[in-house]
Image 1: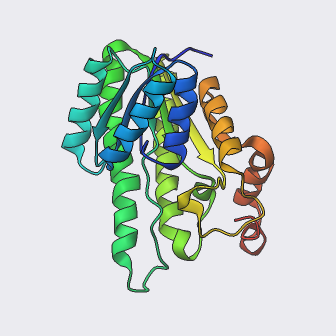
Image 2: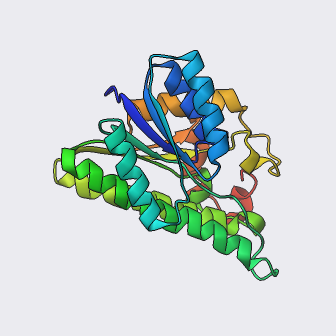
Length: 251
């Protein structure tokens, strides 16, 4: 495991992003935190610095769907903190509705943030990592990417399939070139956050347990991982193999 001293997290104002920031701050890592809600980021920065005065925390307001803003903000934070060792592309949106039910705006917004926004982040992060030829790029996908999802989760699952495919393709490219830039595709299962507030499932993991597993897994820098491993390491492969009527019982 490589000790990444300085970590950038998008979508850091709440949910898993905020949870990861708290865990890494407690480990003494320096943080660059981005989100659309600057007020929440500033509150979080104050809390983290009060609890861990030896670290540095920089924050920026950011809409990841704005390519120019992503490139500018990533560059500013990289310069301010003396180089980002790990980029965690966590910003995402979980809005959605069944296709054709008159709520296309929600699906389009989710697609813009999760697909275009992730691509924007990957482009900006890789440009910076290429200058040093070393670092770690983390894509936060979802178990929903493993097969098509019904109703309100349809578009969300499809966008996360894009995220995983982007991560896997980039890993293959860098690995074949012998690059020291590591790429990790993380597929969280159901963890109790706002994005999962409407999901009813016996497979829900409590927030603290889920964040602990997420941070531990990312620090190990695997190529791909379902988190938490129990039960998703066993269930995940089944989702791609079982008939539709059977697989939907798990999701």
